Length: 368
Image (cartoon, rainbow, N blue to C red; front, top):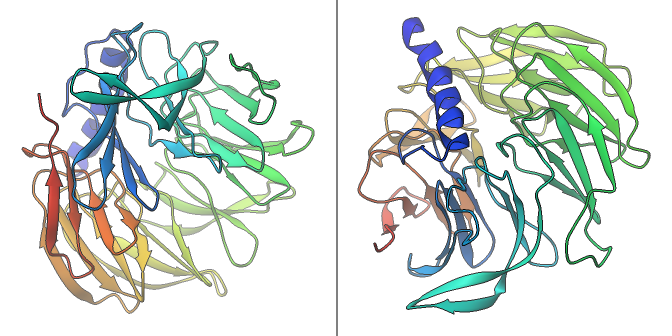
């Protein structure tokens, strides 16, 4: 299994290089997925799709008519004003604010209006941005954190601040209200002041960090890395120490439930870690590498594996049910109301909606 692990990273790196030239094809990297109360938002290379949650039908799709080499796979972010923020990983590296409330006709299809764009980044948009109040914190693979004021009324947005962090920024930031925390593939965790945008501290963990930090119930930051370790950081000082050795690379972001963190590794192990006593509760190994985050639903966790299966795992580590979705799943599933959304690769559909017991409700495949 370990011989396969570097291949996962090489595939994604290769996809980034291909997409930068406009040459990536579906299946070379996994899509980005998010949802609100009515719509699923799927970023899948040349298009961003809006999919009606009620029936799985396409509500709209977006591609840039002025940049036919744009490629999308960062999960779209929905602002409180209803705009969908998504960035391209190729060509002009544009960040878009789409307005799905203003749909335009394009033949038989609907296309959301573009509220604004930003074209000043020099690298791909791999990470989803973070909305904090009226501000947008958008990390780019060029090593910069671009900060926007979402209420400034400009039609052509420009960042109010560009914070040079360095490295390849691939994960969505998180915030504790005072600081924004940004991880890097170049081994670092950065803390940036929410108000002044000053860099509070930067720390090296000696391994790439492809996921986001998790803020524990104890107020500490927990970060997994390709050193196969879970590390705990003091959010004020950045002082840190390893608290758990995993069996393999930790690609995903830990999921918090009270004082417990849940996360997987690329060997397929799924861990429950108690932040109160810094001890392992249990670990199980359903099947296949785990790259996506676990998600909470009611009193259990949902976990997708590379093998194409979705598991419901109780907080005691026991499997409640599993459903074979098919293909390979790298994208974190999304809970939308009573539905669980899964975006696999290597299937004839792009998106599947399951009910709370894992039964398929609908699938979505775009019309040609």
